Length: 123
Image 1: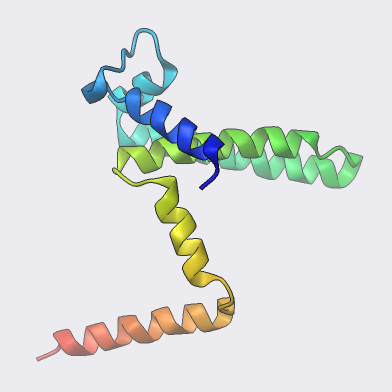
Image 2: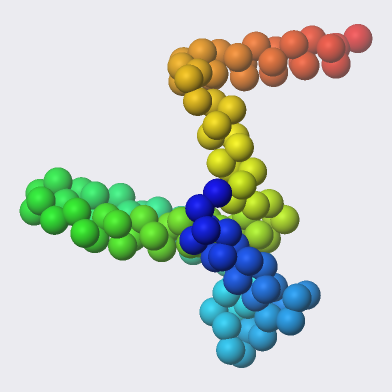
């Protein structure tokens, strides 16, 4: 995992109120204090802003806003991961697991696994 991601994840973890994060002094601690819905709402806002920046870049050719908005989206996604006691490394591991697997094949495999699971539950 990149050192930047590792450091950022550690800082985010330290901002959890349970780890001493102070919501009066830290934006991240304030989000943690507000809970899942506030974090998820922020991700939705950042995802929309990222999409809009990409649409603008398609028109004006300036992709710098895409990078800026994507950084905000990633940052808030890291907060969400920490909220659910997950790590960026787990996401990277999942991406590595998928590497070299066709998206069509991966989706078909998930459907097959779900069907097998449903059949096992039936009496």
